[in-house]
Length: 310
Image (cartoon, rainbow, N blue to C red; front, side, top):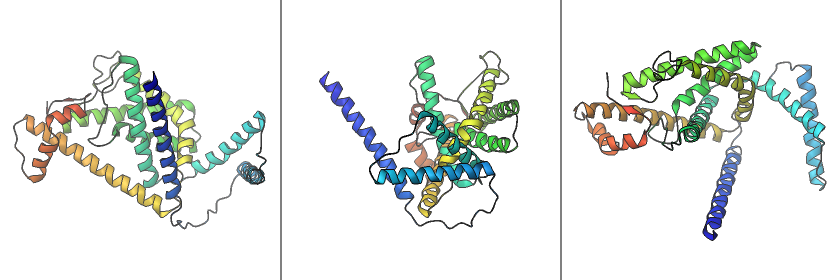
């Protein structure tokens, strides 16, 4: 009992330390040399101007009250009104945001890590499995979810701007999710000789990699993503304000590119080794030495690695 309490205390301290380190690092990134941008000249709707004015007054008053040692206390109704004003300003900013490589890289990372964690949690809850569901040789990434997050964000943003009906968002999300699963599943088996999922035994199966139950799941996810996650996530990511932020995300993009390249190289060599094809250069010798069949089977526990053309 004593050591269990000690372990919980140590775990709590470690988590708290990680949270502190992440907050410090994010703050440090924001203290770099500012990025100069031209002033935005579009006319804000009256509702947005009013909401921004009210928020500005609130934060000024809050800062003053904290300065004199009398924190500002709001009622539940006032907090609800404040949240509504913040949504108005955030949604307007997001709907007019220019999505570039900076946002795409962060969306890919968030989707890859978040999707991997959710899938592993789902497999544990439904089947009791604790196997890794990784999609790349390095890091906790599942690129299928990363690409899905990017596509859903870009498409849902366009649908939001066009004031699309909910059923249109649902259908478009179904199509996007189905195409993504079909192309990814087919590409993995054709190019890498690997099968990560197989729906042939699932009721409502359409192809080996697409089934109706999961299409409905993609549709529901698209609705949630368009109306809840997209404005919140893009509002959180925003645009880079310092050069440190740009450099850091560039480093992440380079790392992910190398990770994808190495994953493809490792699967290619795995398939060639199974076919008795020897390495052709020093790089392939290094891959065979450091990414053996045993490593690949342990790393990608959920995949069936068959070889090209099988």
